[in-house]
Length: 433
Ligand code: 4AD
Ligand code: MG
Image (cartoon, rainbow, N blue to C red; front, side, top):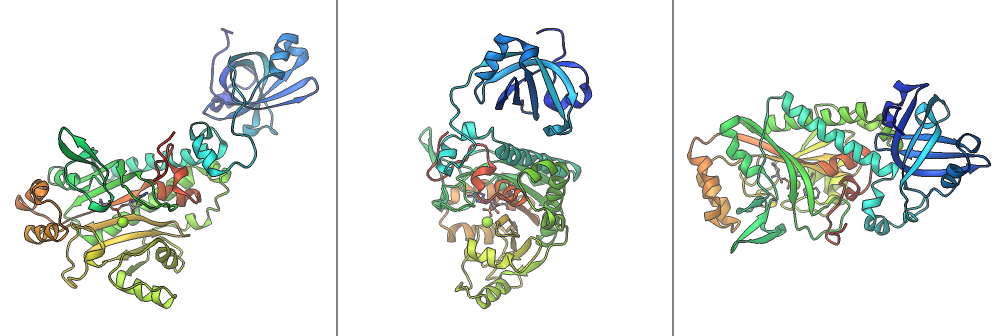
């Protein structure tokens, strides 16, 4: 097997009529008398390979008829147009070599329980559906960097091991750090705020950690968040950036992921409508609305998942809920001068019950008020000396937000649970594989 060029499935259209070599994994084998149909997956796509007993001889035919699902193989054959085949091409096999014979594959084309699939996540990734989901994640990730690059943001990589609590003391993972306590980052935000006076517009994108004791379809203990931070932007501008950003991500996915969204049977009509501006409702009006709809929420508490779904029902687009009560949100949010019981912040709630995909706010830029909030929350003051410095040396109006990629891609793909939106999910009851 030396002469013909080795290609990938995605390149087949450019090689019609030629003999090529391919390597990949066997998805299925069907035997029809003296013909075998082998569906080969190589990561770039799938192609049907046709083996005719008469053409390959006894020995290879024997091997093909024993071929097990997920064996890795190398083939040589001629590329032919075949409209009935997935992708429109097929390979007429002249030679095939088994590179790695697979034992009986645990995942079969039948119903498996989700825990079984999660236990076999390392193998489940190969399925058509999971590949489609993670391809959309990949495209959305690309769109994130593309958007911020075009907007003149500088990417800042923020630390994962931190000494100061980023969001709240309730959901921290901590670890011993040479006798000190280190926390796994809940956010990169505080460090981005430090980078703002150096670069103006910055963002980070990385894993963040929350010891959430909740087993909902929206919570991971390790998730990826993209966080921009903008100098001299107020809460209004912050929401305008969010609606442009989210519209960009959705449009990108629709344009680049049509085959994947079709595989996932995602009805894209609601996604097609997503464009700025998004509707907005104040927290106080949202509470009013929720109570009319039968919720027992009291002014002052954060919205739960069920509340968010009730609000989303009222709107076709993602909806901003803005200016929450101070006690429901993090210490760094700026007090609302028009109503000091509230802070200048917003959540963005996705349609169709996918819940909060963004949390954002204007930051408290007054050093005294910020220190008061740190004390009120019982946070260790010494750990925030450097953060308070940012208010001591040229304080400035600034805002930013965090978008959780798993929840966002769950919404875009229409998958019900965030565990499928990350290659190897970390959940309260799952650390393996
Ligand atoms: O609202 P959060 O906690 O905001 C922050 O962390 C801010 N520091 C962001 C900022 O202003 N720079 O989280 C932001 C988003 C949520 O809206 C949600 O999409 C996602 O992160 N998120 C989670 N996703 C999956 N599992 C979890 N446990 C999540 N917690 C938050
Ligand atoms: Mg939030």
